[in-house]
Length: 183
Image 1 (spheres, rainbow, N blue to C red):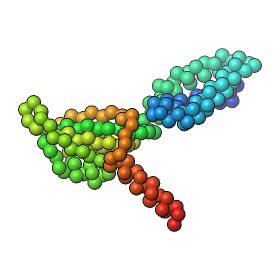
Image 2 (cartoon, one colour):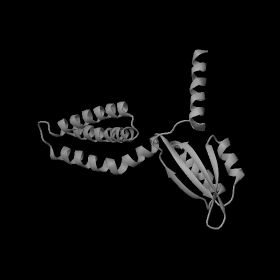
Image 3 (cartoon, rainbow, N blue to C red):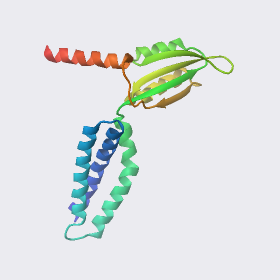
């Protein structure tokens, strides 16, 4: 019975990241990966239930299954989705002053930055549009906070994009990798 309890708990812990990845892939229109994760998710789910409802019908195993099902989402789902950080984020930063030092630092750090000048209620405002990989979002926000603590910041996830600094740099990186492998 102890073996069943440990196995059921382990299955629940594996189930969470797969469920999270499937959801992320679905939202990002990555259908093949979402389908594969769905297959794995169903396999784990059925296997776990078969252990729970096998011959002995142990109430302890059923309780562990239910507890693992509830606790896993609470403990792991948020952590796993943040740590994988799949995709991109667009960050819009509104500044009262044009901070050339910040703009230069962001560009030197590999961020694509577009600067716009706008008319605020009392003065000119400066808007920075920055596209970054989600796994670099916190780093970006820390940089902005360090140089512009009063900045108004909005971040959102773009559904699709075409062209621009980031796409061009990704193509260059892929080309360099191909050249390195061919050498």
